Length: 407
Image (tube, rainbow, N blue to C red; front, side, top):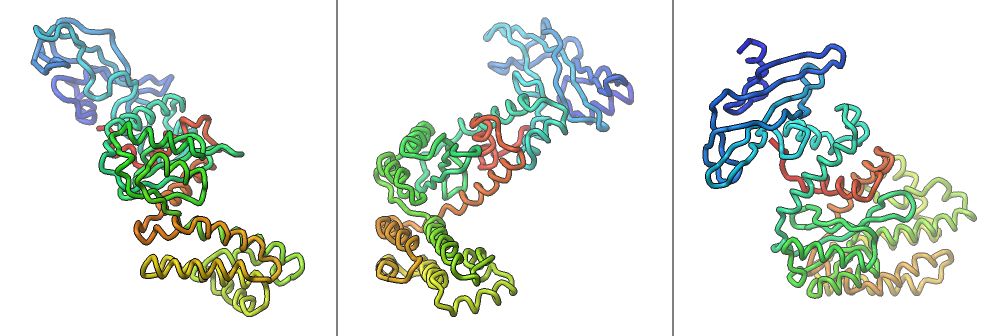
């Protein structure tokens, strides 16, 4: 064995009895070709039973894409032995450096999985010099393999939320294990039938819908109906982020309507929507005098701040009194421009039980919100995904379906 083949033998980390027998560089294609072989007479474990049996023939040579050497595209070539096991019959030995049926080595696939979490697929495909369809197949394989091995029989707390799949009105819904912070299922749509689809997948992975204790969702009626039917014993907990978001939307509508008559509100949108601790010192100085005025926007802001303390109450009974008082006060106000907040208060009064269930099951979809931000950033960077399948694959990849890299 030459010094060159010895070098690449060590770099590849080939198991016995595999050896690098030839190293060839093609200056025209700038590709490095490594030929692998095994000495005559070597025995191999039977792929089925593991018994050591001799090779009597070989399949035609196959090729795998490997990690680049010296920034050059590197290809491995090898013919594979066929064994005749007395128990299992004729079998072909599989490559120890690649999974069956793949045209890539395990190390190359691990590299793809690592980069796919950090960059758009088009950029990744350009970087490694492969068509993105081939790389999507790699991601799909490991996502499906990871999901097939999952057992959800012990899952008790779920979160369900929607995220935009493509521009317009196309959505997918995610179901996550809130205790482990992992995406379980993705389904098209965001209605009652979507929740049923998520529940079917949950049951297919040994999950017990009747054993689920609580499901955290937004204020959507279709989600609520779907959860009550699919997870009959679970408490519905309305995510407090969405409760405050509903009031924030009403607050912004009030500001926009009032700003048409009062120039003091021009350019102040984010002063009202952000919490005080997230404002700059300049923004805090700008907000302070506005809070002392008779503006309906200022009154709505104070009500929002009061509502935000609901989840800090010591128990459900105290929180119930605060929520009921808040809804009554908003409904009784006769100040102009408060119509959007009155409608929000009516919605919260109708969702009272699910809001207060937080005090028995203190759940939040914060993990989902963080993941949603990551997914939407990935969607914008990728300029959209060609199909819902690809988007779902990326959700699973970023959401924890692939726990380890191939080696």
